[in-house]
Image (cartoon, rainbow, N blue to C red; front, top):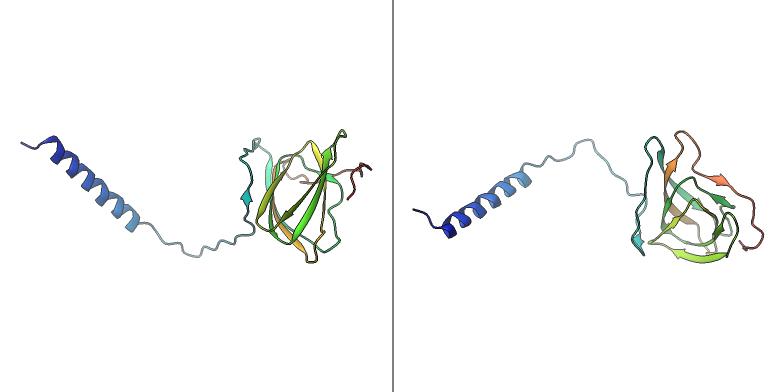
Length: 155
């Protein structure tokens, strides 16, 4: 009756028609707006574990030239996408350790980990703007934990 090849070609043609109809019947949005507040390219792969019951918070932060965040940590992993300007990030373990200093510019993404403390300093000549996503914030709680200046990490 029909050969295997004929049946296979007919099935593939039917699948193409069904997929084209599915795309053609997609609904256009109505009364919907989306604003990109940050985007950057990650230098390495990472995963974030979000505990049930905790909040995820998203902030846009602007720091003026010569301004700084002050020493702080976060209750969970924090993803920072630099939108504009440049910042120098000073960091070390909360329990003490080696001071790390890195500079980030527009389009870069970095993580802040909950076991480290940080001070982000605007070392550029224009404001820096970052989009920050905070994970594992206690429900209704703060995404920032103030820390004392460790004294051995300039910034």
